[in-house]
Length: 137
Figure 1 (cartoon, rainbow, N blue to C red):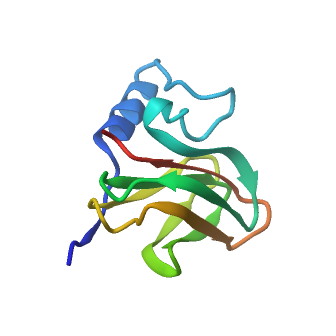
Figure 2 (cartoon, rainbow, N blue to C red):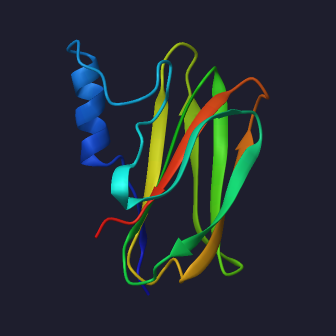
């Protein structure tokens, strides 16, 4: 069985490193995560408190990356389900005045073709969060 790896993608680390040097990633003003581009299945630009997303169009032939960023003091618990099976679960610390980020990378076949859900359970309703689900080719 393939394993789920929790990582912060190199592109995200590069974007965060650049933001410390005066450049900023391609996000909306005040945004938490950049638009995922052509590999993106889902982009929740910003939400607060508990929430999530239901989407479709996943391919089991491609790897899947779920990334969540947040801020506001507290944490968010993130779960992803594909065809009624939990395929990823992790927590993101959401510092006050800074952005926290975490992600899960799933090998091809873990996320099944079709629809999937992502749930976000915030420790405080004022927490800001954003998420992306991508399937790089």
